[in-house]
Length: 242
Image (cartoon, rainbow, N blue to C red; front, side):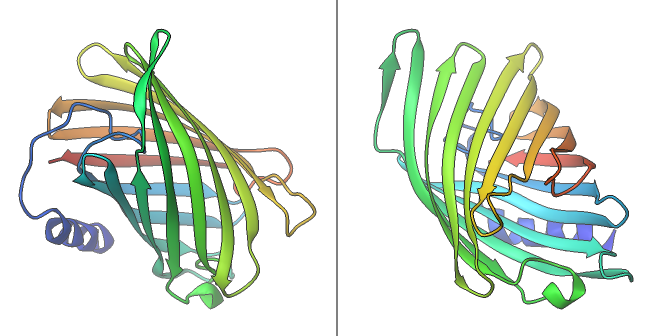
């Protein structure tokens, strides 16, 4: 409860002035919306456990430039004893250079990058110990209530242990009546530093907006293959659009 209270306090500081809702689903990282989600996820690590409490939000600086941010706090027992502390801060600017129509689909191109800064708590089993940069390219395809978002992002370290990973990601979002949505988020990272290990994961999300500015959702997560980073996970989130 103390962790969630701290996250809400940070959220209030980040949000500031209330703004109008743009109509797109904020679960789409390429949506032109302002939002902050307060989230909690639990992961079974085939013995050890991890809980991740985090803020996940975005702000449209201009109609073509979006700034996403994440702030993570972990609680885990991977070292054999229970440890908790801040894990990482993510800052991700995304630029939309072009949009238009492609047959029956509307499209929006995106290029950007991500800065990942760790809080130096890897001795507690929290984080990787690497600060990273990660350029990305993607496209959002929209047809009616269906959104498809293929993304490619490459992660390299600029400080700390070596990181050299390319992540292929496909997000599918389907809108349903009464402001309900479903989402599938499949990630296939290829880890070039570890003999081409593929720590694939998939996330299923089901949510509902009760007003244009407030919604909730639940997550189901699963690791895929022998290199999976976790066995399974569950999560909950509160969404605030502004």
